[in-house]
Length: 477
Image (cartoon, rainbow, N blue to C red; front, side, top):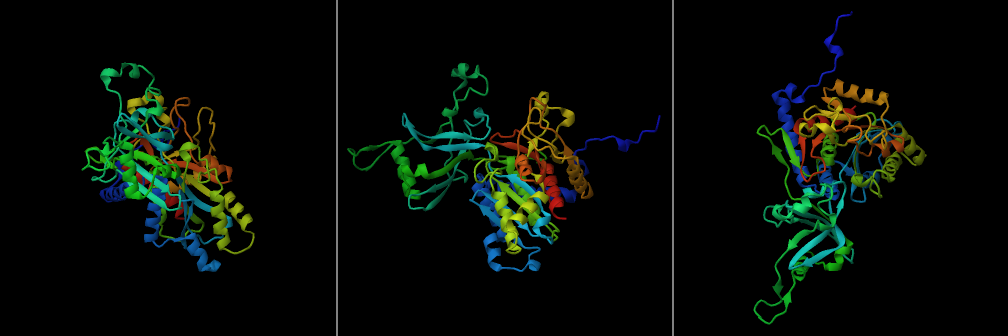
């Protein structure tokens, strides 16, 4: 029998164990910036706005500004630009040395997260308590949302077209909101139900007020105001809106918690919105930190609506990527723009930057441990997602898996490869399948999480760092 070479056997390693102190300092600095981004970006609109703020500070121009410059083709390489689509998704690019026909090197994440949306007529008063009625967005465990501090975010578009930005509950001096729950002494019937049904989604009513008042406090005979009338008066005084304006609004409820370090060693971050803003931020930072003018145009993409199927005109199923490719092609001249854009997408290569489930020893029975991602194991690659018999996946070809892993190896990026749970216990979807439908070569590649889709999710700082380094290596070449 031949002698055995230990290099033949694959062995997992925790990426923390081969970081020196200088790398750990980089991890800490990156994650502090990431926590600030998370706290400022509780909705997809806010995530796009936060990105634009960082981009403008780094010299990026809007596509309209670049178009107005009318640069000749030879001056375009190295141009930094962004294209915003309907306020809720954004494409960011550093133009390469080659024509767009050779394709983009892309990293794409989504910036929508599970939450509670307000119903069109949200105000409901019962027994002198005023509530917001909600409709949940994305896959949530409803029992996780009562009894935690909540905040209100979004926009109200008034009849005259004025758009009001609303953000209440994030600062220490601002009120928070909450959903009540039944006390255990009276909850026997509730707790005997399956966990998926003991909180009725129609009961996810958010408490927003409880004090009635009077029109004139000095006049004892003055008409008593209901709690609803009091709160409507508050909104009118603060924002100049009335109840009908709520019907023209896009308002959402999110956890009010700030991103925070977990553990004595501060090795993890607990936060709302890791899925998928952890990948959005790291791809954004990768583009901001590029040192070279790339050969192929480097692109970062923030998509919307992934949590509800990537639908709508800002989701990955829409023509937003095609529109972006056309805009880029048009910068190079008035020739066959549509043909160039189509060839560009067919030649493009992409990392679908989305999170995955990390092996959790507290719930080991739903994982195939030998094919699971681990906290601290590095950026996680999924050749396919979907569920059951690979339904709803693009199933990346081996050639592209080799190309990506070679890039990671050459740049010292810690990576692992996984499936998302046992075959009939796990599974999920990303934007990868919709990018593949457009002809893009695509591989899922992101940060492993615990407690995914909970109001607070957990991520390892080392995995966040390796996602950043992996995305940087992929686009900066």
